[in-house]
Amino acid sequence: MPRKERASALKLWMHYIGINVRCTMQYKTSFFMMVLGQFFVSFSVFLGVYFMFQRFHSVKGYTYQEVLLCFAIFLMEFSIAEMVARGFDSFSSMVRTGSFDQVLVRPRNEVLQVLGSKFELTRIGRMLQALLMFVYAIPRCGVDWNFAKVLTLLFMLIGGTALFSGIFMIYAAFCFFTLEGLEFMNVFTDGAREHGKYPIDVYGKKMLFFGTFIIPYALVQYYPLTYVIGKNDNPLLIFLPLLALLFLIPSYAFWRFGVRSYCSSGS
Image (cartoon, rainbow, N blue to C red):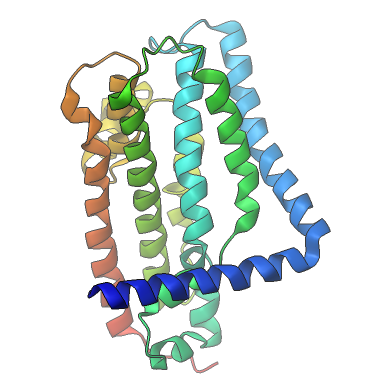
């Protein structure tokens, strides 16, 4: 895409975000209550981790602070993706009501329009929870912080956001064939968020294999985390989370297949 078109697309997307934010802030009380609700939902999961470590000093060699660091990063990845790619998560209504027909006749990429249809600002509540855990864990997890490890965290956030965005895109693409979202896909989004509070190897070798070669959760969680906390000194792990960006390729390919197969619901 030429630079001028990229700039135009970015400007349009920011315009979409501005519209969504202004609409959300028309009901400020509802917004703050939703943010508070999102915060306490994540907080209840944190309490589960807290009480676990009140009884056990470590889980498969991971300390409380290391698990909190893992949980904070993974929750932040999911929250950013859900905020930005929420349009895919609620896409079934566009197909069911036939409003996707309007998207197709507009002279803009349909992915950009779907992304701009929904911006879930209330996910700030989850992000705040992740940030608090992150701030608590950083000085207490015993990590000797340097530029490489900070860069690893940044790449984890980028790769994780792309990974979850790709999963949301696949979820939306299924709607072209089913009209409704498939609930089993929540296993790979909300389910992954819940299980991602612990490093993936805690769940066994089969789960680690699945998270490495099928849906690459481990690339944005387990492997780079071991480098950050000093369990693995291979510098290649710094850039491993960026490989999760490749997951967007099959996700987008499936999306395009769905668009080509789309027949209006007639609603």
